[in-house]
Length: 555
Image (cartoon, rainbow, N blue to C red; front, side, top):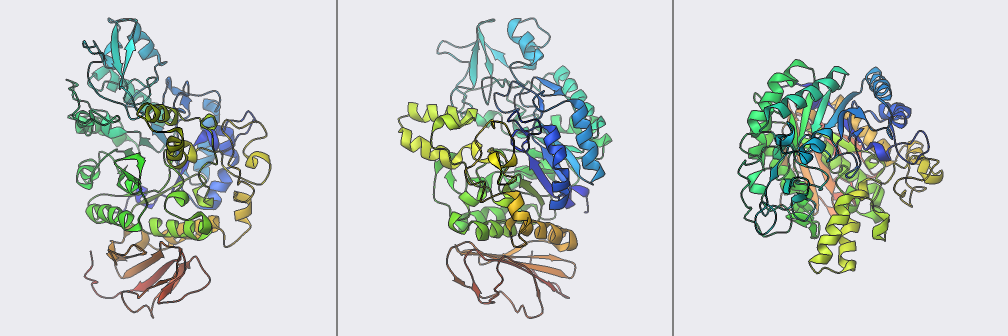
């Protein structure tokens, strides 16, 4: 079924690090306005904007103190209106980050609730008396440590599954849900085209808040809030009372989810959400949680991508991403810095010809790399600091914790956008809030724009081909060479059109035999000038297009 979100090409902007217009070292809305022509040049038609709401910035805007206002560092509501007008004028839609699992502890609701047990806002949150051993239960947060914070004003504890400055909202409360609907309508009436729903599958908790069974230091208790008892009731309520009245789409961040569970949210006809961000493929270089590292193996990535491609085909819709504000840079994880250009092009080709909506994170289109930081003091991320403290408490050495952080810290994706070779990469003329990566003179947009063979222009080619070939969007998925740890080969079929995607995940030349005769096929994309039908060069990626006038029998 054709729907607009299936043909979207989404670009995520992390506003604090995108473009600073007033040289205070912090990216802002007017900086985004300055770069709208660049977004149009790239070929994207949708922007996902990370939070710009009023916030104390404990977690870089994911702790909201006023849902209907703009953080002054980012600008004003008038700037926001000008920005969205400029986007729409260029045919670009805007989806905003919707953070409704928790608020800031500086939100007026929470300030009133924490002071007075009789406050009408008290039940907007989870306040509980402690037990003789301390907190009400043994839950631990996503950021490490207890999920409970003591509140001396009323001699009890409040729940926070993330930072202690991000108290969880109690969706059991009808008044709270009505407040959230008003917030949604406020932004939709301003012209917003949809929402990326932050950790949406944990908003429903078991109201008894029982102890968790796990002994791990993080995510203990998750069985009592993952895909909780009333999650579908709440999402259907938002859909029927708000979403159904607007031309919009939603993508839900859904942690620790399976394809089967995902379909309970996104199956066509159900459509509580239009698609989800799942994290299976973000675990292929770690064990269970990202801080327990393991060597990346392409076969593991192929397996999890294939699982989601086949399970959702014809039933629901995939999101296609390797990077966002919470993940390290993909060329560091799945590519090779010695072959940065080739492997970045390969990763983009492998990912964005699969079935689903492409999500490109700022800087990914020029293969920005992980931060160069060597000292903990260079980082800014609350999760990074919390995990470092927890690791040291558990007996890990400073060297070992810094190795984990250097590879996995969220700040790897948050260094300023590298626009040109000027000081601070053209991001600001002031002092940036977080250091610019030292490689900005080598890696920047201006340099890539002038080079027809650049990574940036490879992304533009992929975007153009997705728009030209409906099979790239609507085709089914069938994979070859499943057990290979070197090559990935899959085809897409739609009506009489077929694409064959072939990539080499290694730094070596690899012998390759096509699964069928390609003599009548057209090579429509190649990240090398050379073309050898039975050999792949290091990190080579090729896409063939052909006509098939019979049932392929695949998928």
